[in-house]
Amino acid sequence: MNENISNSSDSESVDAAKPAVSPFGERRGWTEPFPVTGAWQPGDPAGARQFLTLPRPLALEGGGVLHGVTLAFETWGELNNAADNAILICHALTGDSHVTGGGGGTYTDEGWWSRIVGPGLAIDTNEYFVVCANVLGGCQGTTGPSSIDPATGTPYGSRFPQISTRDIVRSQICLGELLGVERWFSVIGGSMGGMAVLEWAAMFPDQVRSIAPIATALAASPQQIAWSAVGRLAIANDAHFHSGDYYDKDEGPGNGLAVAREIGLIHYRSDAEWDSRFGRQPLDRLDEFDTWGRFMVESYLDHHGQKFPHRFDANSYIVLNRAMDLHDVGRGRGGAEKALAQFVGPSMTVSVSSDFLYPMHQQTELARVLTNAGRSCAHHVIESVFGHDGFLVEHDKLATMLVDFFDKVRVETE
Image (tube, rainbow, N blue to C red):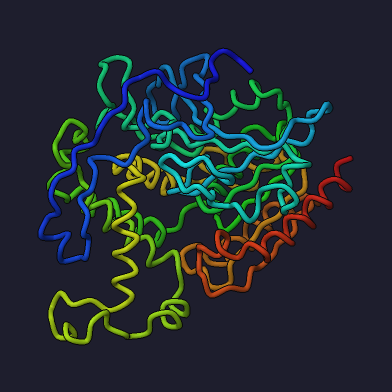
C-alpha cells in the first residue's frame, strides 16, 4: 500500500443542519427533516473505505483540471501471486464503493450486491480480489461537489466541473497501479457502471482481460436523457438549491432531491411490478377523494424519497446524472465499433426483459458490436418483472450467468 492510502481522515466532522419539514414535504408524506447534504464528510465513520489521493492532477474531457483528487474505495479478497485474479466492479448512479459486507457508516451495512459478491458466491472473494471505488463526482468519499476545493478551502458546490464517464475511468487507472493490478481479470458493472465498463475497454484495452456491461448502452438515448433532465430540474427548482451553493445554508435542496429520486424509481421498475404490488389501492380510503391523499404506490415512492437525501448529495446527483447523458462510447472515435476495436477479450452483455429505461435492443446492439471481427460475446436475458433494477434484484439469475462467464474467460484467455 502507498502512503496516500488511509482508512480514515483526521478532519473534523461536519454536522448538517436539520430544518423543520416543509409543507411540501408534509404533502408528500415526508415526516423527517432532510440534512443539507447526505454526502460522507471527513470525520464521519469511514467503515471499510480506504482512500487514495491521485499522485497527479486530473485533466478533464470537458476542459479544466482537478487537483488533489481523492478516491474512496473498498477491497475484498487477496491479490494472488500472479496478480491475475482482480475484478473491478463499477457502481450505478446512486451506488457507492460498498458492494458487500458490513461496516455501517452512511451506506447500507449489507452492501448493494451482497448476494453476488462474497465468499462462495458468484464473484467469490475466496478466489478473486474484488475492488470497487466511489466514482469521481460522487459523494461517498471520492472528490465531488461537496468536497473541499483546495483553492478556496470551501466546498466546490457550483464550481465543480462537469465530468464524463471517461474522466471517471481515467481517475481509476491509478487505483490499479497502486494495488499492483496490471490487468483486470474482468471489469463489471450495470447501468452507469456498465458505461464505465465500456470506457475501460475503449480507453485501456490492454489492461482489461474481459468485460461484463449489464443493462447499459453504447450511448444514452433521447428517452434516457429526457427522464434524467426532469430529475435534475426537480432539484434545480428547489428554493433551497441556491444554484448549487447550499452547503453553508440552514437548509438544502432535500425536497428536490427526493422528487428526483421518486422520478427515477418510476422508470427503474416496471408497470407489471407496480400493478402486482400495489394496483390502484389507496393508502387510506378515507382520503381517497382528498387531492393530496395517496395511493399505495405513492406511499412507496415517498418512503424511498424520504431516505435518499440522507445518503446522497444533490449536486452529485446532477453531475453524475448529466455524465450519463453525455455517455457515447463512439464520440470522437469514429463510432462505437472503432472505439471498441482494440479490445479483443471475451465479453458478456445482460438485458432485463422488463427494462424499458435501457431496453433490450440496446444490449443486443452492444453485443453485435462486441462480436464484430470474431470476438466472443455472450448475450443473456434476465426474465424479470423488476425492470431496470432487475440486475440489482435478481441475484440468483445473474449469479449463474457470471459464474459461466468467468469459466469461459479462463478457457479463452489462458
